[in-house]
Length: 157
Figure 1 (tube, rainbow, N blue to C red):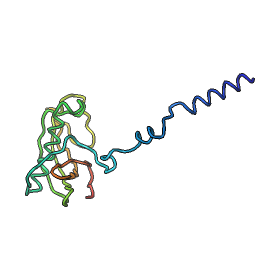
Figure 2 (figure 1 turned 90 degrees about the vertical axis):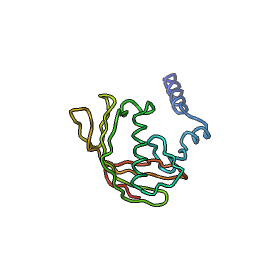
Figure 3 (figure 1 turned 90 degrees about the horizontal axis):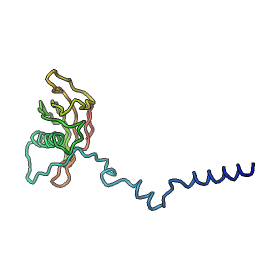
């Protein structure tokens, strides 16, 4: 009986210390990076524009095309990679000095049959997925424009 109790105590001590890290290591692992602190999700690389684009709809189109071009690249996971795209329409919703919100309707041609269709859109016989609709929020920092959020319902600015 004493051997069992001693064995049980050893097992409990092992379990209580297994997986423990030093406080500094634990803190550095759980500390969010700067983008997480700002609640920023990256949708591919940002678009750098060194001159003013007077038309916000043109700016929105360029930023969204940059995102779709990223989805065509090898840097994008195969299950979300596309071969081609068409932007059907863009409508501006809101903007200020650092943020831009617009809605976009577009179509994509997936690169593989394993493409994961989430949200909305209609699969066509020719392989295209059309009538995909999203609201998109773009954040500007200096000359870089990054998509920080997409949703199927309106995004507050």
